[in-house]
Length: 353
Image (tube, rainbow, N blue to C red; front, side, top):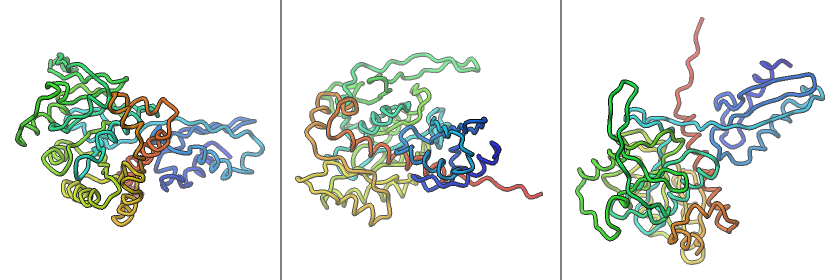
């Protein structure tokens, strides 16, 4: 078989995780045949692709005897798929993802920070924006300190503009009003002030080129989500809730809010899963609503201790019981983002001769 024939044959396969054709995903980046080997490079839509070896197995079984006894060499690279809708306000970010909840106290900020560090763990370029103006938690959870500075940036056309520089937290760009106020200072603002601040944090901040920007929303439903929907198109929203019914009621309201402001819901995460609050409530609610269940995070003292110490990043470095849960959640969310990008993209039109 020629390189083109192999590529055509593989292009008809269905990705085992996303259930989308190889061709539509652009999985087969290159095919190179020699007298003793067939070299295939697979380009994954995210570095957080789970079980990539299944693709190699599928390729091997598909080509089978067509390989003619030659060695099958499958290698992997990745390039994050993205909606890149932040371009209209000058952002070079492939995917902006909101993390929200219908109420406070469900671990939304901890989940948002864990997701950001999880994506970074897999190798993606990630930023974390704390949009919870009234109760900013991200500075504490990340352990990041300092005051964002404003610097002058010269555009290609020679124009000079002012840009806010995010704080560096373990190699990740982080921004929060918590860096701009005293630790015990209350923020008492009306909606227009929130809109102005969020616009500055997005449009007037030097985020650079990112694969993902995770936005930690304030609890409940309100102005921030509306502002986000007006400023840019989001890759989607993750809803965090605990297993008990009272939390699920508010999570459903958050989902309704995202639907109303045209932000696609990527799915539901169950936090604090375990004996105290129960287990499985969010998974059952996700199934009822026809939404993906993105994983459960156990109620474990390790998460609380590391968060209080500003060491959420260390959850991915140490061998601890919560790491697999956080990684699986990260994989599920990353895959849902990639799937939304592909599903929402218009199919190429066929030229009729």
